[in-house]
Structures are given as structure tokens and as C-alpha cells.
Image 1: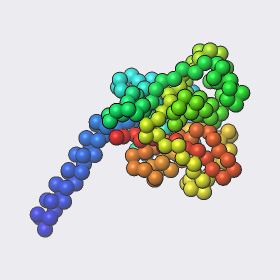
Image 2 (image 1 turned 120 degrees about the vertical axis):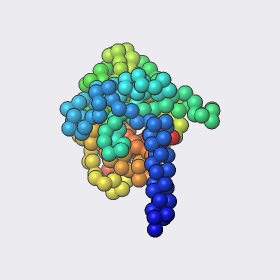
Image 3 (image 1 turned 60 degrees about the vertical axis):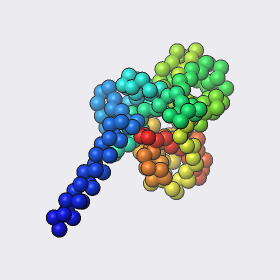
Image 4 (image 1 turned 90 degrees about the horizontal axis):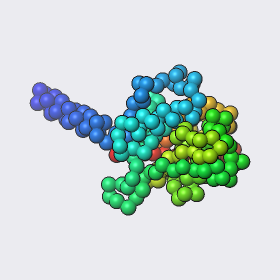
Length: 222
């Protein structure tokens, strides 16, 4: 019995060591400049301010990240960092920083001239449209802008997966995204993507129908 317990203990220790190595090396989740955020804190933050903080935290901590977004992983909201450049195998662009001019913004949903005056769902749809036009799977505004002139986005390809989720497949029906606070869908996206693919979280791109939502699923570790 003692030997069996010892083997089990060694096995558990090995698994823990692998998990810890994964967390320390391949993890794409970074803390923010202000420590771990909580849902209560996020409720008080405008979406563009949280996006800007997440992007700045990711860019500042490791040179290999082009930016990031506030998502949900390991049971709490975190800045999910997005790798830049080509994949280790080469030839596949994972993400890039893209600066859209005013005419590009105006060509989708009537456009806007200041991110601080735009609802998150409409901004998400415009980001999706701009980055799709540039040949990418998905996109997010970083929160950085010159109002009326230019707007920074992270356009994502690589392992990002654009999927359609039936409302009945989600743990909760969020209703009309245009009327939902920005931070609520991040939990639903993390649940949906994490149940489909291990090590994935996600975000809503604002596109919806009466029966479904579009979700972008992204890995938060290699």
C-alpha cells in the first residue's frame, strides 16, 4: 500500500510540475498593471478603457505580444495576451497591430469618430469587419486612437476560431448584445470556448441573430 501511495504521489507531483512549467512558460495570460481585476471592478470600467489597459499590460510585459484583451480564464477576469509575428512553425501570421483610418471606420455600420462614444457591441462588429477586410479571422480595438483620424486594432489569425454558437448552447442567453454590459459576455465566451477546446477562452464579436451569436475562440496557452 505504501508503494502504491508513493507511486501515486510521484505521479501527482509530475503532473503538478508539468502544469507549473506550462503556466510559467507557455501561458498567454498576464496580470494587469493594477493587479488582478474582479468582476465588480470591471462593471465600473468602460470597455475601451479596459481594452487599453489589457493591451498596454501585454505589450509591456513580453516583447512577443502584440496586445491583448480582457477575457476570462482560470476562474477570473484577466488580460489575455495575443502573440505577434509568425508561428513557431513559420508561415502563419498570428496577429498584427493594424491602424485603421477614418474612411475605413466609416465604411462599416456608419462608423464613428470617438471610441469613447461607441457601444462595445457595435465597436466589436466594426473591428471584426475591418480585420476581416485585411484578411484576418478577428479583431479588437486596442482603445488607442486619434479621434477623427486613426484607430488602433489587433487583428488576429493563427489559431483563432470564429464560431457560431446557438443561444441554447450557452449557459445563459445574453439577449440583445447591444443592450448588455461589455464584461458580461466574456464569461459566457470563456465557458463556451473552454468546453469545446482545452486551453481556450474567447470573446464576442458583436454579430448576432435571433437564434445565435458569433464568438471568437482563442488559446490562452500553447
